[in-house]
Length: 482
View 1 (tube, rainbow, N blue to C red):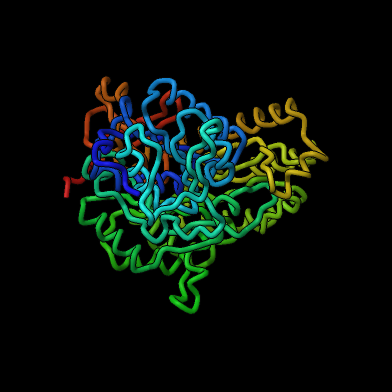
View 2: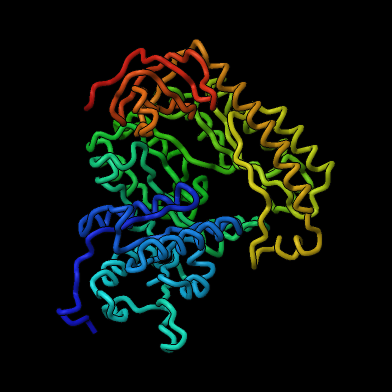
């Protein structure tokens, strides 16, 4: 039953707080694109606050809960809508928090904009939604109130079918290098990972839809686009017999059939870097394909990788890195995720990881202490063989020092050289000093004197490193806005 006209009101402002990966951010951007037609993006006085959560670690859960409490404390009248992986995994827990008006899991993410619009129109009246949208969870009795929940295990309403780039993200300058999420879900079943439960099986956006979005982006004046996914390297695999597609022919198609100036690939599992995809780095790297490869590692120990149920061994990983370097050259920046303190990780196994990382030319590392997640196979492993917290902290510190050393060495190697880059939205403090922020095609942060607008392709000459290891540079050439 629709609410009475006297209770209806217009949503005047909204805010979206993002947690987690690029693919999760793409979900939030899609929600924002739908809401911009109704209200302004208003971070400080929003009447609807969307919390787009991550649940890959316990710390991610804590951060989301802390933000919800803070948002409710600062603006008690705002309706808080919780989405994302934490919402999918622990909907009841979030629905009972003060200020939460609805919980929308990844299974129903595509319905989130309509749910939010209905909530905003109801004023203080209890939630009553159109028949087309029925909460999976229902309100409890008045003595034990709980927000309505949209969560199931079918994932029939994820955003992948409706994925699109927000025109406002480019036209209003919200993001210089937007994500186009082309793949959802994962079936790898690594022992530590909750993603198969929070995202469901792998599902791909069609090639035709992807090409339409890339073309729209180019026509809107975009210069760098990032392809993202939960398990990007699996794009198209379930389309076999329909499109007989995989990631490498898709990338070639984008580069050959559109005028996109630069395409960047987000994280791809080591074994999904097949020969055809690597050869594209040789053919297009440094011109229209960013010389940047992020290969999740997790551990350099064979024994630990086996306990993690990862589908490669250290020597497989090293061979992929070597092949990528041969294809793209030493300008390639390689990044990795590394997990510390997996259950049963011995000192010897950790030393194997240190030695493995030391031997490879990483440009950066993302470090994560192991976090036990309910319902994963690593949950009982942690109960049986936990690594003491003090040991984990010591190992993280050792890896952090090694990562900083490798990052600085990698960036120093480019001093005196020219690199293509794209200008970013410069932080206020940097802009106040008359400087501009940029990012090179091989994923190195840059700052240079002078002010240029965001989304400009430039050629920079690196002159040194700043105290935080960003490249200092001067601009050699820059493109005029298209």
